[in-house]
Length: 69
Image 1 (tube, rainbow, N blue to C red):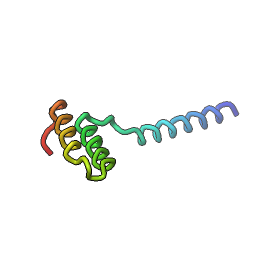
Image 2: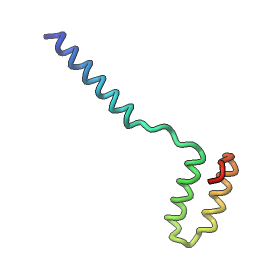
Image 3: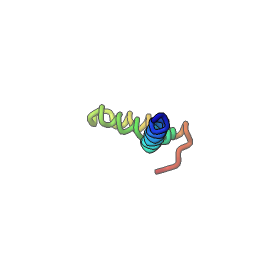
Image 4: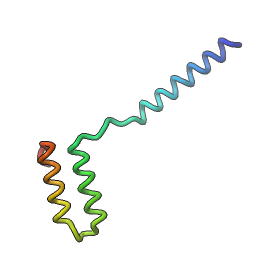
């Protein structure tokens, strides 16, 4: 009986670890973070500060040596 519980626990742990690994994403690169911040800026500004968002985005890309898109 103890062996069966041990096997069930091991299988459950294996399935949980597999599910966790499948859901984990690689961390964002600084260039991806620049793009996300730019999109958020555009969305929150509602078109009123598009030029400011673009300046911040270009500055972020320059600081992180991002390639041209």
